[in-house]
Length: 320
Ligand SMILES: *[C@@H]1O[C@H](CO)[C@@H](O)[C@H](O)[C@H]1NC(C)=O
Ligand SMILES: *[C@@H]1O[C@H](CO)[C@@H](O)[C@H](O)[C@H]1NC(C)=O
Ligand SMILES: *[C@@H]1O[C@H](CO)[C@@H](O)[C@H](O)[C@H]1NC(C)=O
Ligand SMILES: *[C@@H]1O[C@H](CO)[C@@H](O)[C@H](O)[C@H]1NC(C)=O
Image 1 (tube, rainbow, N blue to C red):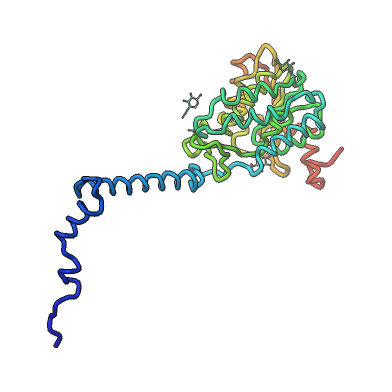
Image 2 (cartoon, rainbow, N blue to C red):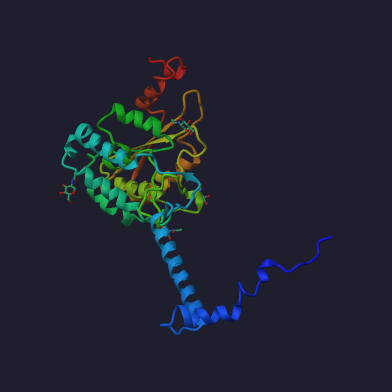
């Protein structure tokens, strides 16, 4: 059985508490007559100061990359600035030499300035105004082609009919076609991780505002008879919520545009009728209120022939 003996630590000669304090104050630092309280305060202050300095320096040096907000949609297209610049040069130096004088570096910068360091859900027309001004161009009268839910066919058509222009055949539409982009209010970086969609309760997102603004300008500048390719194989060939139905037809200038010709195109093998579709009546009445004459034709032959390239055996494709 171990007996409780004297513990080595309690040796009074080693740790004479009252003497120890006395020798500290009056023996080791005779110059400074500070009380123990003051000394403790000083030490605590020093420790605090050092801690603050270490933390501040650490935060400044090793700051983690700012985390962007996360959205439902896919992020900015990789190499976005490079694509804008490259497409601008391709368009102005190869495709449309009349626009050779355009400053592509300026255009790229104006595009970036429109959304960098900004909340991607509070985009405005004004954000894109400098870009709109830098990319002005004239589409000849009678050569404007709109489309709705028929992007592929409409663009196949303008590829063959080089005198006709959709928005994507103009410089502004061409550089942005198919791309995604957004920034972040709290950072000067591009958000490659995610971007908001309309569905994120974000009506005024960077891309929607851009396309609405570009489409508005495109329609305002149209002159002569204009054409639209509509999709006859969906329930509403004319959709009031589409860019065409929401923006473009309301921005045609009736003094300049006497007529709108609609080509309602069915997919090959789909026999449904379309100029009689109720949604086409909506289009007709909007235009009649705006004093623009309306014509409608189903399966317009030049467009039909393009569709037939993929289905040469179909009965609707036999050439009489
Ligand atoms: C674009 O705008 C500038 C300045 O307003 C003007 O000088 C130029 O002629 C315009 N270019 C086209 C193609 O409309
Ligand atoms: C009509 O819309 C459908 C569904 O989006 C699409 O597959 C088809 O290619 C479109 N047709 C035309 C003529 O654009
Ligand atoms: C979107 O922008 C329009 C036009 O600037 C504005 O009237 C509207 O209030 C904005 N909507 C939202 C939800 O921010
Ligand atoms: C148009 O869009 C609004 C809001 O996005 C929606 O509430 C409405 O039902 C749509 N209208 C049509 C005709 O699709």
